[in-house]
Every structure is written in C-alpha cells, then in structure tokens.
Length: 115
Image (cartoon, rainbow, N blue to C red; front, top):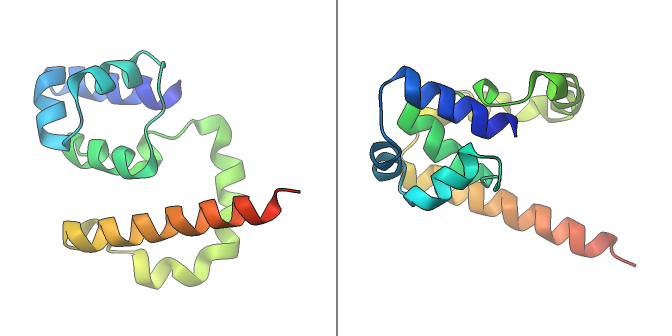
C-alpha cells in the first residue's frame, strides 16, 4: 500500500484534486482513488505517469523496507544506467516503447518458467 500512500501524500502536499492528477497522468479518477486506498497497484507505466504528474521519482513511491531488495537487483542491471540515466527526459513515446518492451519480456520470462 506504500505506493498509494506516497501518491496521496504528494497530491495533498501539492493541493491537487484527484481529478487534476488523473487528467495530468491520463488515468481515471476511480483508478487513482483505488491506488490511493491500496485497492489497486499501478503498473510500472502508470506509476511513471503518476510520478511525472506529481513531480515524483520512482524511488519516491517505493516502500523503503523494499529498498534493499531493489538495490540488490540493481547491481545486475548497472550496465543499463548510462542508457536510462536521462529516461525522464526522453520523449513520452520512446519511454512508453521501452516500458512496453520490458513488460513484454517480463511476461515472456514468466511464461517460460511455468511447468
């Protein structure tokens, strides 16, 4: 539920309504409400959209109790850092293409692991 709490806290800090954040991020008000209440978890794509709308980095919405796990995994992907260091500055279409590709690869790997 940490993601929803972080998003709600930031939205209130910025004195924004759910409708405003939804409009800026391109997600529905009802979905944003579900995220904030912990009923739904956004995809990576929607988390990035919400982060952009609220001026948050992905690490700002992560659960600090999970940070060690993320850092452990990160070392395996450090080779990508030079390519992704300015990811937030990329054109939206390019970012979406990368996200879709990574989600496709992740789902392909999950399918391969099933018995």
